[in-house]
Every structure is written in C-alpha cells, then in structure tokens.
Amino acid sequence: MLWSNLDLAKGHSSPSFGNNTIFITGLEDDMDILFALDMEGNILWKKPMGRAWNGSNPESRATPTAENDRVYTCSGLGDLACFNAISGDLIWSYEASETNKGTYGAWGIAESLLLDGDKLYYSPGGPETMTIALNKNTGELIWRSESINDKPGYVSPVLVDYAGMKIIVNVSMDHVFAVDASNGDILWTVEHEQSSNQMMRRFDLIKCTTPLYRDGKIYVTGGYDTGGMMISMSDDGREARVKWTDPVLDNHHGGVLEIDGYIYGSNWINNGNGNWCCIDWDTGEKMWEEDWHCKGSIIAAEGMLYIYEERNGNVGLVKATPGSFEPVSSFKITLGDMGPFWAHPVIHNKVLYIRHTNALMAFDIAAK
Image (cartoon, rainbow, N blue to C red; front, side, top):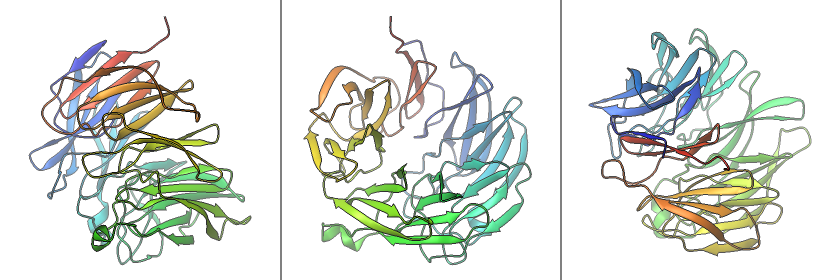
C-alpha cells in the first residue's frame, strides 16, 4: 500500500483522474459530494454536486468523468454538474431527470456521464425521452431522443463507431437500445431475455453492467438468472438481432470484460454469492466457472485479471486464460466502514486503487 484516505464520505463510486488529481464521490446528509484529492490521497476540495438518491442504498455510485480542466458528475437523483477541475468552482448544473420527466428504478441513478466532442450524454428514461445530449461547456440541451417507455438501467453507456455513425449503446430496464449520437434518433431496440427464475420475474430487471462492444457485436448481461446475450448489428447499424444467449454469466453489478475473444466476470447465484466465469465471445460456451469467496468486480491489465469480491473484500490476481481459473496471489481489504465492497477497482499509472465505503487505498503493482 502506498497510502490510504479514511476521510471520504461513504460511497461506491470509483476514482477517475485528470490534471494530476483524483476525483471521487460520496454521500453527506442528502447530497452527493465530489471530492478532489492529490496523488498522495490528500483532500484538496469537496463540493456538493446534486441531490442523492433518497431510497434504499443511497450512497453515491456514479464515477465522475474528467476531461482537461473540467469534471462532470451525476447524482443519485439525476442532477448533473460541471466543475472546474482545479478550483472546484461550479460551471453549470442541470436537474436532468426531473426536467425531462425521467423515471427511476428502486435504486435511483448510477450512470457515469459519456462525453463526445462538445456533447455530454445522459439517460433520463421515462415517458418523454430515453437519452439527451447537452452542450458539455454550457449544459444547454442539444437534442432529446424519443422515448421507448422504459426506466433507465443502472448502466453507463458506450459510444461505438460503426457503419459511418457514432452510436450510443445503452441498457434500460427491459431493453438494449442504440441512439444515433448525431441527432438522437433511436436506431434499434432489443428486448432483454427473461429471467429463468420465476420468482424474480415479478420485479424490475436489475441491469447494472455496461455493454461490451467489438466488431459490430454487443454483449449484454444482467443478474438474477437473466443470463447474457450477444447482439449483432446489421451492416447499416439500423437493425439488430440476438445471435446467442448464455445462462452462465448473469453478472450482477461487478462488470465484465473481454480479452482475446473471451468474456470474464462473476455471476449471480443469490444476492450474497456468485462464481467467477469465462465464456467464449463467439458462441457463449462456458470455458470455466469457479467459486472464489464471492461475486464481485473485475478489471484487467497486461494479461492479468484483478478481481475484488464484494462480501469480505478479498482482492485477487488471476491469469486471464480460458483454460482454467488460475489465481496467482491475493490480499484482503481491511480499511473502511461497514458495508459491501461494491466500488470497482481502477488501475492508473501502475497503481491499483481500491475503494471501500469511506476509504480509498492506493497499491503499487508495478513489476519490480
């Protein structure tokens, strides 16, 4: 460990980086707070960024988006803000969900904002629109997509270049959908696979996993025995169909990643447990499924997986190979207040950053 900071407000967001500064969010009273830290973990400033989610699990969860001398945030109730990344001065704010009659799932908003040129994208969902584009410099509305009458998921969308277009691929409660980034047109929608768990069909689907994209294909997954599916776009990008489905990797909220044609992540057995899995990108075939403490979040670097299980805070280094689950080493996070280990790990300049509720820790992982 290089350093730790135990003075943050509780939250589940990950850190982001810009101007040699770390940005992270937390919950204080009924407001989400943006913190700026120096690279040794000392707090430089903190600013309220919007109204926090006021239902179950209110802790902040949307990771800030940093670019040049600005940082962009989204609160649990869908309030957006832009700050000067150096001084912390507020540049603009916009109650995006409320203004656009957006709707919420049972856990509010958990979207990290997507930037593209001068545009910023956000997903209110609801009866009036699914996605909006704002001028990132002023917060003024540029366009609003039509609605598909669905609630937003707890997902950060991805921007892909395909068929001569920039396409926003996003996930709502019941659909995967694509938006033309130039004008907000809905290009296509695909319904999610239904959960195989009859009891869970009574509830909203819990879609928390950002899609994976490669070569015109999109992998989407969700927990609660919903499974995953591979979606293939048509040559012109205006239609899409399901290529295959898989019952194995029903990722809850720890994320998935693709390396060399294989998808890695953890699945959902129940809210307190899950296994680590690898499936084939082309077919969905299960390569392995292994029990390692509990389900959790995952990132990768230099051919290695870094996994962070959510129940007891074990961090593991695992070889990224479809042949078998091969842990190399592990350690346990012991800092931070009580609560699940839900923040996703981040690697920046050969430093591994791990967050647990009010604590942020930095670990040197450079080869010696």
